[in-house]
Image 1 (cartoon, helix red, strand yellow):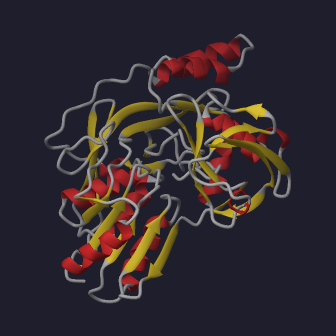
Image 2 (image 1 turned 180 degrees about the vertical axis):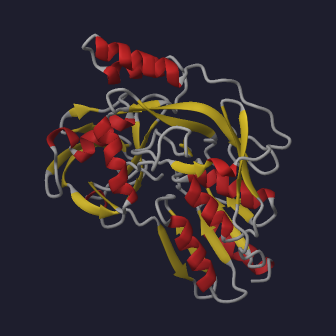
Image 3 (image 1 turned 180 degrees about the horizontal axis):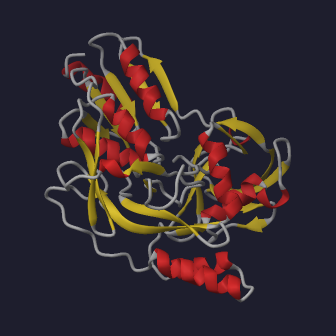
Amino acid sequence: MSGRDLFCQPRRFGRGAALTLVFASVLVAGAATGSLPVGERGPASGTTPSAAPVGSRQDVARAAAEAMAEGASPVEAAERAVSRSGNRWDAVYSRGEYEEFQEALDGAYTGVGLSARRERDGRIEVTGVAAGSPAAEAGIRAGDRLRSVDGEQVDGRPVTEVVSLLRGDATGADAGTAVRLGLERGTRAWTENLRRARLSTDSVTVRRLADGATVVRIAAFTKGAGEVVRDAVRRAPAGSGVVLDLRGNSGGLVAEAVTAASAFLDGGLVATYDVDGEQLALHAEPGGDTARPLVALVDGGTMSAAELLTGALQDRGRAVVVGSRTFGKGSVQMPSRLPDGSVAELTVGHYRTPSGREVDGRGITPDLEAGEQALERARTVLDGLGR
């Protein structure tokens, strides 16, 4: 999920009728999950189970329950248990934070339009700014450092807390309420006074280039994004090429990434993954456009579900991947409801591309390296593919 101070809520919990997996980074300003039917299980040929996670859902649930019985904070107890896992992607969300997920999935949220992530040194860095948002109008841009929100320092704090401050959860802030941000850019430090706004989470934009090629940019795999991609491919001029722009896409709903893959594949394997050592698989739906020239644009901000899609298209020879090495977020988190209604997300496994490549900590290497001129390079590649 691309952050933008929003959350996305999974439809189900647990392993009954559905298996809920999180592939999106929890170190951006939000988190996204995908619900995968148990029926999608299948063999993971050529792969081996990952090691069991350091922590466990049972450990976290037990810590939360004991805290409740003693009159202590179950969320704090769960956070301490989660921290012992040593996994950077594990997190705990309060009931209120998780309830906000649904709002984001429905296509709107209240905030200032920032995407951010926590760096290894604890700093909070802005990774993107939504067009037309209060943050954009104030001139905030990717690469800026967020130092404080309403006077509260954010360095070293979980991004979930930073998100809560940006949205004004503690005060029930609505659109129009004020928020003061402390920012830093190089040697410059300054304060911006913004007003929160009701913003759209439209995550897919489509534009036609003068030479007939279609650029489909996916900022995040939010609800409905996959079908928008499929519709864009159907509407593209016959025989023309498509540039699938995944730069800066930090992940989202796994099911939406698989639907997007189905726009370009005629069924078949998209990825394998494991949950506590059990091997499972994701498959594309049949009927996709397998002949149209396709280039996928990626960079260091391409993460998680976006890497899952990129790896599938690359391994199956469906797209030429252009840009720079992707982030390398290939671990799987499963949400578990705790006794007080809060939710813990713990790493339970990792996913792999169709050829069995591991993504976590490695990323995906593009077929052709390109920097600022990546789109121009993509158009040249389309010409070579017979656009």
